Structures are given as structure tokens and as C-alpha cells.
Image 1 (tube, rainbow, N blue to C red):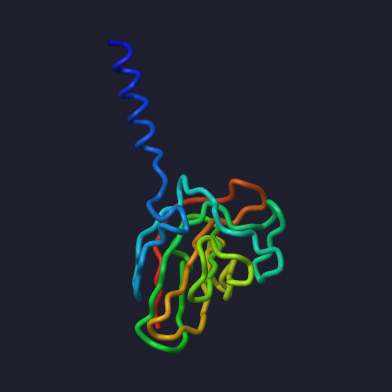
Image 2 (spheres, rainbow, N blue to C red):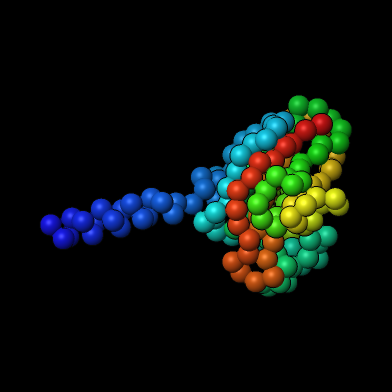
Length: 162
């Protein structure tokens, strides 16, 4: 009987700490323009690059993107697109955008742009304006800032819009 209780407790514990379904780049969730899409990077692992020579630098564990989750965004327009978590996440975030056709996980040369703290955003949240072409698929990476692993994690909402 003791064995059964132990097994049940272990099973419940493992279910409660499950990683997000889009924890790995290969499992990116396809999205279009969205408003207030809920997300969580709690218990996410890190499978993207550090980008030491980018606008969001990191070298080894320093100032990198941790606990990343992934989205595959296909715009329905050509022009400028705003991806924002500005004031809508409960942790210090970093976001990165990769060129259409990028492999999973991407490499440094695939980085289109990234942002650590959006200009007037509160709580260290991120936002970025980037150029898109209708029908192209852009890989979006949402992560927590961190000076050392494991970095920040939490929940929130984000918007991707024209």
C-alpha cells in the first residue's frame, strides 16, 4: 500500500512540474496576429543560443536568454510588426526574432533582432518593432533575462500586431 501512495505522489509531482508544450524550438506554436495571448515559461528549459555579438548580448551564462519558449509567427501583411510584453509579464523578459527559414534551434547568424527591456515598459518587460513580409514564417523566442542560469521565469500575455 505504501508503494502505491509513493507512486501516486511521484506521478502527481511530475505532472505538476511539466514543461510548456513549446519549450523546445522544434515544438514552436504557430500563431498569427494575436492580442493578449497567455504564456508561461515556468519550468521551461533553454535550447536557444546565447548570441554574444547581438543587441542582446550574452557570453556563457552572462546576460543571456533563459527558460525559453517558442512561437512560429506568419504575418498576414507586409510592413512593421510590434511584438510586445510591455507591462504584461510578471518577470524580467528578453525576446528574440529569427529570420524566416531558420533552423531549430537557430544559430547566431539567424538572429533578426532582440530586446531586453522595452523603452518605457515596466518590470523589465520587452517589446520590439520589426519588419515582416506577408506569408513568411518568423521564429519568435520568449525568455527570461538572467545574469546566471537559471534566469527569470513567470507568466503573462503578449501581443503581435501590425
